[in-house]
Length: 136
Image: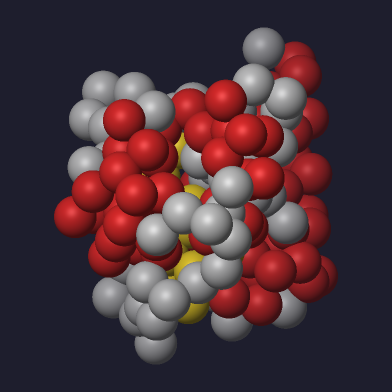
């Protein structure tokens, strides 16, 4: 089991709130890193992205990131990471790390598997958190 979950994001939305609630209920320690406050530098990105296919970590939204995606095969990995460090907005978020496991984007089933939780354990707390956010 991992010591704590690291969440890298630029905003806390209802999905992150539901995840926090689920982790609190299951006594899973976590830290949320606000990458607007403290952007990810090249060293941290290299650590997070490890040997993964970088395409999974880049937003394809039609601005500068789509050009980067189209050049992925021709650019050296270090140059891609340098560009991502210059503009963290090109990163898909959240990036969630639990021990040796990493997921990018928000996929509830993948997160529950990553956290060793059964789907039923988390659905109720996630739904409760979303409903609570809608009431506020």
